[in-house]
Image 1 (cartoon, helix red, strand yellow):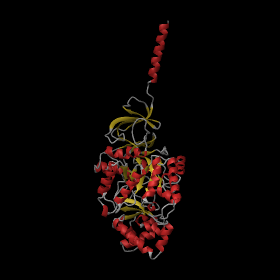
Image 2: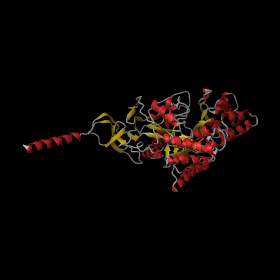
Image 3: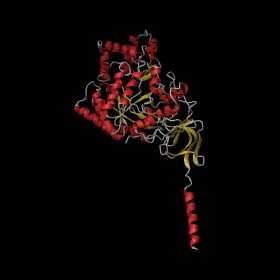
Image 4: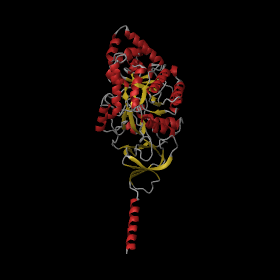
Length: 531
């Protein structure tokens, strides 16, 4: 009798054990794709299993049940791309991520995370922006740097002078506050006021605070034209003496006199890496830049802010000095030695000139096309309220040379855009797809797996996102499924409001925001904090 009872118990336990070992159903299975882990390595044909916001299984999942099973054979399954230099948050909460929370221009490229606060400009305090985004989530994840220029403007103002000891102490406190709120590091825009008025030593003092929190320093350098070598050396020095990783942001060589010098700037980077300095680069894959028209104005004219500039422009002795300096910058810097190379992107006070270059505007106004008249036109536009422009002054060989460097990662220097009357730089719509379609598939600048590594694990590791930018079990399921044979940017300088092609599915935290090539309207993006 007892032996019989024990036999029944044993059979029962075996049955329970077998039942408990039955695999749980998965939420999503991506079946048969070429899986790129995020490492700089060739893909493997595998299935990916997702439950909630995590990757929970990788391998042959043919016998597993799932709520949604997608055949992704002949497609690339990649970690969601990370845009480490994004203007997703602008100067107000009516633009960027707040105006277009679906971020379709990013999602259709496979971008799932954007990092804002570049070029020395960020919201202050960043916690307010975090709260606003969490109240109205977007389709993409958002993190940010804190901007040196924003802090300097808050504490010191727009004047060309060093901070007092008390002001420097207050600036350190602002960096500390932002790092504790979750900033990924300190950004600078040493070509823009008020950041351009800072000494190297001032910036080093602030980076030391970011270093205490394992942050990085990312810099729009002082010059990207004639003094680009000095600027690269300064950026490296700031990271070296500040004791933290340092990054040359949207690295480029501006102006024909300096074309070809990417070989020298990259040599400086390699020498720094060899002596133990942690240096990296980001880049947008275009031969034109975009920023405010005042980039062509001499630094001395910007001392004191806009009102002081207007006073100088009204002065009959100072205006010709400003004009002469602008002409020089048209010749050797972002003007590309031709007024036609400066194209208005957005002029709020006169949208009729959006998309026109300076030569076209001068002809429209029945004025002679000359560099002097172009400089005069620029001063008039700034006096009327300022505009942003696209500047065609970069050489394709430098673009490819910088792109190949192992520490270079693509980044848009754009933002979240949608159709509008602006004529923005096409990098807003095409950066990542352009690298994959044009530079990888058509020009063979690098292997596909290398480009994917540069868009995923490299930027993720740069800012400490250990569970994103990779496809491994346990990672957050930020995943894009793209067709390597068709992925391409469609945006052009003439018609920039065109979405990229080639993305089939995009998941953010395991939720489909693009499914079978259609936006779902889901907004599962998270605010990402460094702590």
